[in-house]
Length: 276
Image: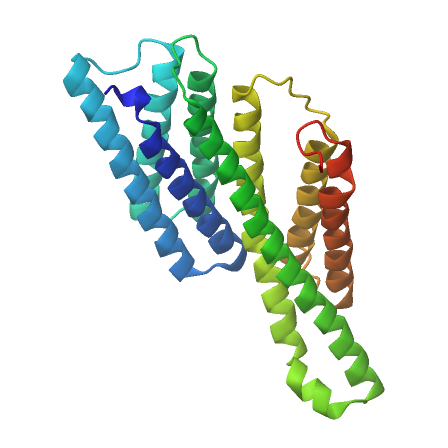
């Protein structure tokens, strides 16, 4: 079987790549070295899998696969990953590595999308179905993390009110301290946001592999990007403006209401996500 027909392994590569980007994002926001190490080893595993597929193709066909746009995209993604690993290992330039990995992940997704829509593609319904499953599962993982973040943000506001009014002291002890509630709520947002973005990328890939006409202005698609935008604002103001407390907690609640509305209300207006 040729390299470009081994989509089971490609799906694994993309998922591991996405996890690596997520951990790099967490490290970028929180400066967590443990997360950085996890991201690096995931990245190294992705490169090993990519290298195995690349050299398998070279062995079978006797040439480096760079003679058309489709093959070039895969080779380009492999080179980006190699450079990223070298920079991360020898120079510890975290921001550069994070940005390069985002580019590499997008190039890998472009490769999958290009092959899926090419004339030589012999994709089965199973592959298209697996893309859809990945899209849905990752979306629900992100929704779950956002829901937990909303719960902690709500508890933060309740605790703040109780402490200010000096009431319900037993309840205050059970809820926890404000700093811990705020930190957990924010970290959940940090993990959920790239996961939801990766889910949307899988969703776009699935949309382009189906026979249905896909609209970029589909209500659910636009709503999902708006939700990511709101949560990205939370991350931005928390990291750059060092803003914590009630303002961030309230914005978190607003973001969750937007997420909930996007899932229920806009789904009914969507061509692809209609509720039956």
